[in-house]
Amino acid sequence: MKLNNKILFVLASTLALTGCNNLFSKHVKCDDESALSLVSQILNDDLVQSLDHELKALIKDGSIKDLDPAKLKLSAKNIQFSLLDSRTDFIDPNSPKTSCSLDLTATIPSDLVKKSDEARAKVNAVSVEEHANNLGVKYDNKKVHLTLEYVLQPTDKGDKVLAVLKNTSNMQTLLSETLTYAFLKPQIEKNQIKNMEASKAVTPRNNANNATYDAGSETIEAADEAEWAAQQATAAAEEGYYEE
Figure (cartoon, rainbow, N blue to C red):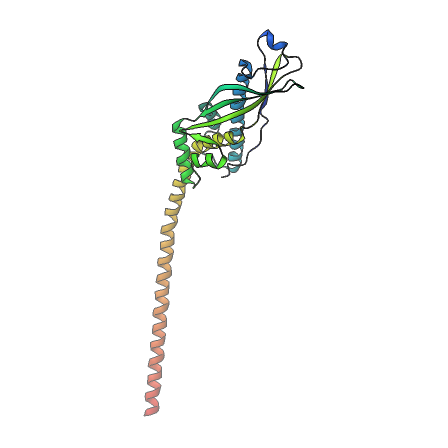
């Protein structure tokens, strides 16, 4: 199962601005409520799209015959994004773009991390924590921490704001694959049980075949011994005849 191949989604969207002041401002403030709401929406939408990509690959491979596909995308709702301490990094004097950053925390429920780790162990995949380390994602106590970089820009009419998230790819990979493994745990367990049952069914047949082979070998050996004994008896008789 390959879970690491990702489609890079365009993390951009628009949301209507609120408040009369925004309509006449060239730049959008980094802590604008509408802008932060949009950032949160993009984070959730991107996670859902990542899970949708995983789901299509699983369906194509026939990997989820016993599971409800809808549950994978719904699991995105279990991730809680917290946006704190937004700050302005750069206001472009030559355009309406404003570069911002904030402290982002994504919390994964403990039971999902547990299920994900158990599923990973069954297929010899690294744990959630090891996966985070491999991706260079700061992960601690079921939480992902990231200094999120984003750019805000109002439309020409000034009635909407455009937001672009710049550095969420690895975090979203960790989140989507953690949820995917947790989702797949029942299927992995069922597949292992089926494989064990199939293996047990094959063993008696092999034993029966071996028994038949052994019996056949013993018959052949007995026939060979009888033939050798007959040859010896014939030789002895001929020897006795010539001596007389």
